[in-house]
Length: 351
Image: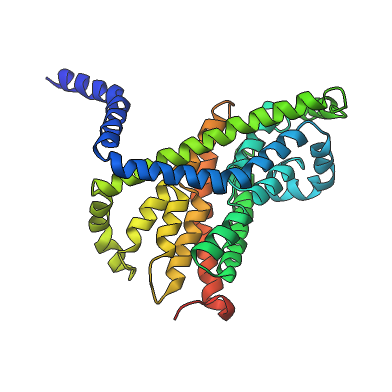
């Protein structure tokens, strides 16, 4: 009897994703009206916000990967990157572009570094933990100005996001610190990238960069639309309401209004929708809205996690440092935001 039960458990595990995808398909049909609207909203968000802000950066980073600029980054910034983050100076390129461009540029560059043997496996995993961040255009522009309608809040969130990112990088300098890096990989990269672009192959390199960037941007668009539909299904089915009722006692014990639960859960799935919900909650203590937003910006959400996983799956990099790093960054960002609000009067927005 026990053997038979174990057989059914194993069979259920093997069929889990098949049943999950079947349920998802059924829900798409059952809530087709709401899902259609959600899919349109996701496509609009992708076309009007994601593509204009990320696609040019994807192309530019692809083009820069064919030049020797990363080598010069390495020589200039190695004295800073090595003691702080235990990563070669070339990692500064991933760090800076990850901050400027936003999700998931940092992860893409770290993965490209691994493919091109710029850094060792351990160094690329360290880069994954802290270089994949929300960009200033999204935090200050979209979150601060559009959602919270306050530029100062946007700057506060960007400052604490950046501080948390650097803190995670310093902490993760000890990730697999006993592993031996292969120095010959850096030498190979230097020889291969030096003066690799010329008039003869410029057109080919631009076309290749655009092609790779289109593939990545379409991938992101698919995730945005997919998670817009998933959130719509969870709302239509009443699941989000059930989650709110379940966690209400816990939030009440922390003196936090249970109305935030839906926004937090949504943000765990997809960052933009979650922050939009939280920013629209009327609360005399606006600091709660801001601190929760800081956590979601640091964590990034399951949608971003899957985007990163789709990129790193083409390499031998582990996704674990990324997951640990983003959870830690979300926690640190919320703590830093709390201290800024409570100890610097200029950043206190409570009524």
